Image (tube, rainbow, N blue to C red; front, side, top):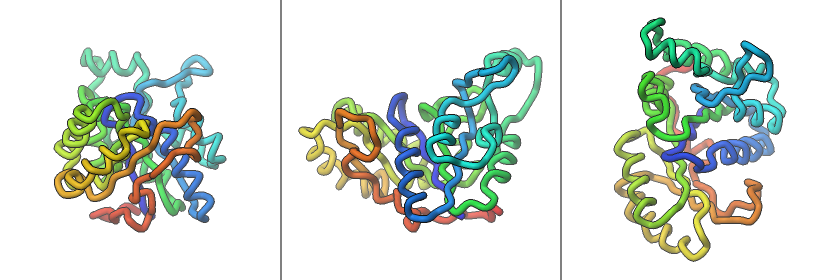
Length: 233
């Protein structure tokens, strides 16, 4: 079994759509794909007292996954839980719960797509930020960012490398204007040596369908993902 942790450097990078497109591609290739979201910070409650993650609900429906929705999320940070944790009303380490849920859902899968936070600092105050989760679950990381301008793009890439280190196997830059794609390619020559081994450029498109994205990272191929350094099943 192989797994890939897909997380955002900043908000609105398109990681959920990327997970969906990659999951569909892998399913068409014949792999049994699983999905897991370690931390949900934006839960919705269809029924009182029952909180789910909206992204996990969407991915489960589109990919037609068999796992129960509750099993696809490690911990749901409902407002009441966050308040209790921060005020000291409860003393709870959330990481064992996340790891146990991941070990259960990975059974029987060929590939696990693990969706991280909206930014690299999401969950930091509760010690469940993407960097900590990736280290605990021993996962290679694909970092996504949304293109804004050349300077912020470079800053975000270097920031991702500084925080994730050797776990970072790739960068996907989303919504790059056609006119700036050449600049991204030029910059990639520097990043490949100093930041990451792989990179991808997702061009702007009038449709949000993943199938119309342009280039995708080479690290979307499972055989390029490094194996975990410790036994996972």
